[in-house]
Image (tube, rainbow, N blue to C red; front, side, top):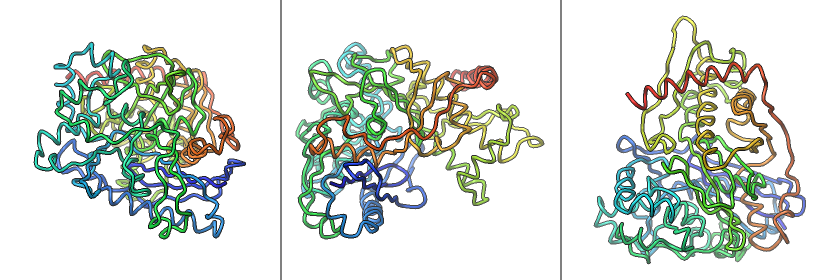
Length: 495
């Protein structure tokens, strides 16, 4: 059986087909070739049109399936990964009512802060394991408060992956994991938080039916089958947010294991079986994809909004038509520490690990006589690594203290400068694997449809392709530089 994985990011949509028996990637494609537009109608806002997601998926699917020829008829299940925390609203006909308010949109920060105060810190942290913050429930409450006429026409709300599943199958569903990432979930009671939806004035029937991440979640419709050449009726059997899915792709399923990624945003994601939370909600806890009442599995997530999007921005403003590989090569020629150039990479909205502060991005120590493009590229990678270290210090307070971090072969982890900096700065071994989010979603589909007898079977073909270990000399250099960077950050946070 062949397995299809779809990964809906905020930059592009990826599709991968793997051979279920061997785990070998047979074909993959993404679209568009440049990053999808994120519309910011006001400062701190971030929206995308779900129809654009679907159009880009259609192109990526066509490109992915074409090399397979008639073998595409052997695709037996579909898995979906998606950008987390977004809000999609549809009417009774399934028509989208407004652009999606996506993960990095900050408009609902104050809505969530008020809820945290009014509902009570003790209730929110012990039942929701998070502040309502800037998550999907708060974004929906913002729509209710500011767009009441539109709110009255909402039939169902969805996360971005739920919308893609609806377009594939015609069925509107979500997952338990998805409800938890939207901060709708009461961890103590094991169900939707009635207190939260009552406080926000959200009718319960706006939430879709929830199912496990690994389960039958609808079947491919005849119209989509005709359009793609895939068999009608094959199941969508897995869905998860991009970070739980990235962990799955790296076989991070047991307590103590840690995954990381650095795409548009950067994430460290650790698995635990304990109800852990940060009292300041700088990191967040959700249900992991393999959670069950018998074997609890929770994901503790640190998110940094401005990672790959910073590198992409530098690429665009350089005006030199450089590839990311060329940028990485240029940065490797600069000495560690970028000759005194520091950068705060927080230019993509409010940062949860900074208590929802939006301090913007800024350069420090820039000298026109010393610094060139290569310094900017290296300083950006170092700044992102400093941010990971800063967040990891917070995660250690909840018991997540890794000595090994797994990452996929994509985005900033393709840069040896970034990998070596992060390994030396955090005293952890970075292990790189031949996988990405869409391949992980394909493996998830195989688990969900029952093709794999157990999770272990799903990871055939997953191989280590690189290891970055801490370097004592780099560690000494970067420890000093990191403390300087923290002082700059504190000045911006508390000025």
